[in-house]
Every structure is written in C-alpha cells, then in structure tokens.
Length: 257
Image 1: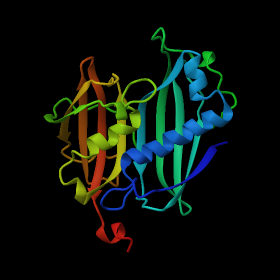
Image 2: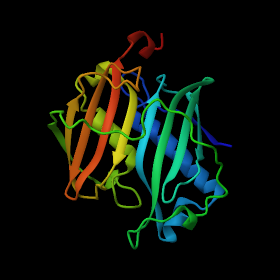
Image 3: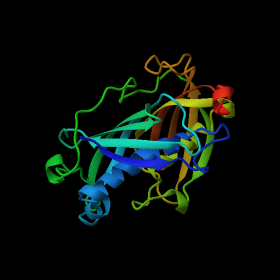
Image 4: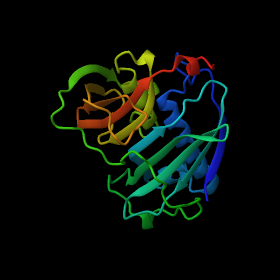
C-alpha cells in the first residue's frame, strides 16, 4: 500500500523554462513523507520530542518528464522493509496519468541527544503504508570518479532561512544550490539527481562547492546528455556528494507547445 497526496505546482516552483525546479521535485516527495508521518503517527515532531530524528543519507531521483506551473501532481510514498538501522522510503510522482518522476531514499534515525543511531526495532512505524522498494535506473550508491579534476565554483553561507528544526541546512535545498552552477543551465533541464549527505551544514556555517563534468553521461540515466559531479565541504569535512544529469531544453515543450 502507498500513502498518496495531491498538489498543484505554483508559479514560485518553476524556473525560467516553466519547469518544476529539482529542489521542488524532492521537496514534494519529502513533504508527502512528512504528511504520512503526520497522519499515521508517530509524527516527525513526536519523534523529535522523544529524542529521535530522521536524517536523510542518500536520495536518487529520476525525472522522466518535466512538469509545469499549475500542473496537478499526485505523489505516492511508502516505507520499505527496514534493515538494521537503515530505513528505506520510495516515491512516485504522477501528472496527467503518467509517472513523471521516481525517488529512492535511505534514512537513518539518530538520537539527537546522544548522537547514536537507532535500530529499526526502536522506532515503531507499523502504522505506515509499506511495500517492497521499486526498481530505479539510477544506482542508489554512487562514487565520484577519483580522476576527475574538480574546480571550486562557489561558496554559500548557511542562513536562518536555510535551516530546519535540526538547525542544519534542509536536505531539499541542495539540488537547487548545485543545479544553478551548471554552465548554461538556462538552456538545460534536469533528468536525474543523485545525492549523498555526509556532514551537516549548520546555521552560520560556510559551504564550499566543487564541480566537474563527466566525459560522458552515466549509462543509468538514458535521458541525460551531460552529467555533472559535485562535492561540498563544511568545517567538519565533506558535506554532500552529488551527480546531476541534464539535457538541452526542448523549447517547444518548454513553451507548452
């Protein structure tokens, strides 16, 4: 079984090509997960008061078709069978009867008072809809090639508006921060996002961003014409690693033609 919620894409959610920005694809998915927690219990806040917090460690998103302003979308999510201290959650985004995006995410539950990981047996999610994980083209585990020449392409100061209840930069803010640094991005659309979160970016901290382009797109993303790799650093070490697939925008489609 799957938990389902519906949304309408707003004018603030899209880029200059009228495409849903990649951070918003992830945000609608994560928001649906939060709604499942709200409705099925325990809620995120109830877990937090109990000293526990879900931390996203990896997420893979495949975008099959771009969605636009005022499109009505349905997002489905479900928990998958847990493994030890690993919590898996999947997502599907549907628009006009067509699957437009899929997601596969891996989470940990951390005791935010002790810093220790919680086992699945310590978190009761029995009320949540559950299915086996679905198939994805992207690998949920990836490695940045060691022979790539990365260049520093920017920095970001983590502001109050970037952080969540954990006082770290929210996980859904990262795709846009990186995507916006791809050369000539106004001429391109995102086909996939692969993110691995390692160290949190705290309020007031500085993120340093490094980027490199793969010689050829990754074979797992057949829609991509280019793949860009990123890693970011904070004072504590590597912050995130990412791969983003892009292709040239079809102007007729982008204009709604």
